[in-house]
Image (cartoon, rainbow, N blue to C red; front, side, top):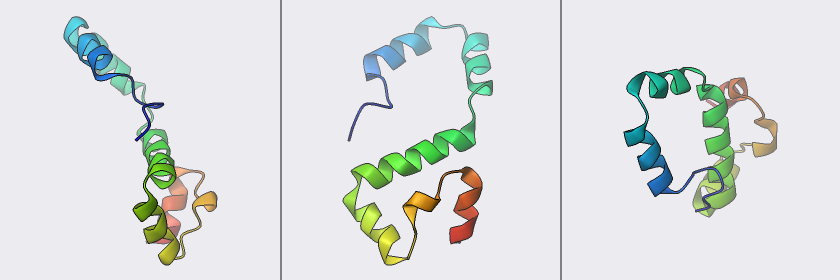
Length: 75
């Protein structure tokens, strides 16, 4: 899998252990979880052929999923 969206483990670990807890919590409060889920979905579609085939077999048009609310169209 690509590391374009994920910094190297050493950087993440160092940031975690060297940052005060209040700062870490504040950072996570500003993250939009729906945007992260959408980015993860598109990353998986791009990088996991079996997942892409799974979605295609179920008639999921990946190009139509451009916001979190579009996930509700494919229950």
